[in-house]
Amino acid sequence: MKKKEEIQTVVLKTQLARALADYDNLRKRVEREKADFEKYANLKLAIKLLPVLDVLRQAQKHIGDPGIAITITQFEDALKEEGIEEIKVKAEEEFNPQLHEAIEVVDEGKGKGKVKEVALTGWRFTGGPVIRHARVKVTKKG
Image 1 (cartoon, rainbow, N blue to C red):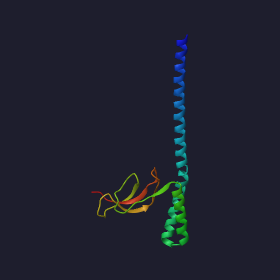
Image 2: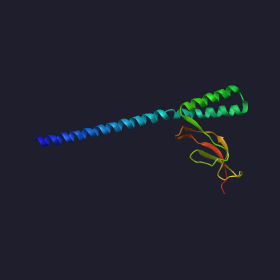
Image 3: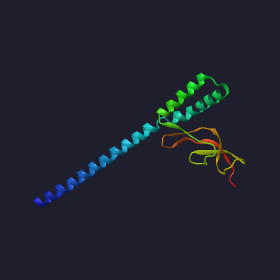
Image 4: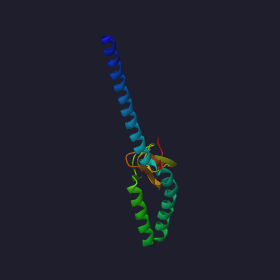
């Protein structure tokens, strides 16, 4: 009888250890999902507001009003606080389909498959997924 009780005790301890491990894994997964949700919760809002920033930037180019410049800076600071950064693209940079969207292929330029001009700024989560690809003109590949 004693042997049977020892076996039952071992079985119960094993089941308890597995249940505790399962609970710990579940808790960690929920924490990861919560962190991801918080990080990307503003994605829909950012997608809706980025065209507004584009319009402000175009207005600043044509009007040059200091009030618009201040608004743009505040807008960009707010995006940065939410973990959203501009995709920096330089002329003559290698075209990267993970960050860039080619909207036009031009025949001029020294390099082939290089960014010639940025038509629309791209945005991404800091170190994370792209919200909107940078729209660029690219030099023609041979």
